[in-house]
Image (cartoon, rainbow, N blue to C red; front, side):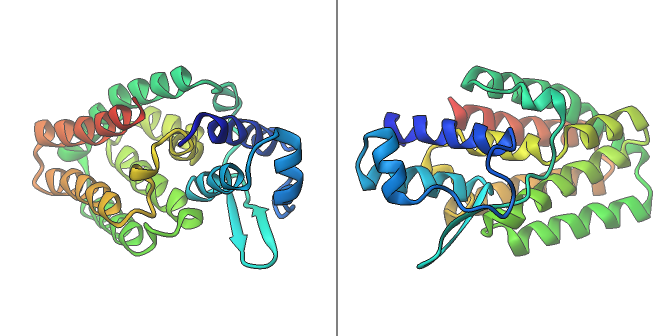
Length: 222
């Protein structure tokens, strides 16, 4: 993503997260954004495409782009502004979620394992739909946290909410957008490794699978 497009993404993202552009409202038109930011139509289209890939807006041909419902407005995550903030969020998630997965591999019930498997199936089906994949991706991680049997893990992940998925997506290179079929396959495979380790009741493999998955996201952000 070009530097100019990144600036537009950050500006519009904050307007959406701060509620300046409410869910269901239309983004400023292409001509307005070109004039406001002093950039070309190509740059504006690149920025809007990134917002769409992050699950923040949905674009309809001939009608424009409309803001989707922001999944979560957790105060702590509203303070995540910079690229460094997002990297630190990923580091935090690696520590929390890898241990939760290790506990899940030991403590999960048959019912909880089914829940993880259903969440994985849902993510497979909607993974290339940015607007729905944020919720599906988050649901998988929350099911793993619940299966840890420790309410502090599940409460913490629930409090972070789907924004913990959405925020990093706005920072990724286009090659790593969820709408990219190759990238989608990689991410699905990473989720499958987590599920498989938990199903085998292998805590070390579960911890490692989560670390690999989240570290890969962190590295893509770099």
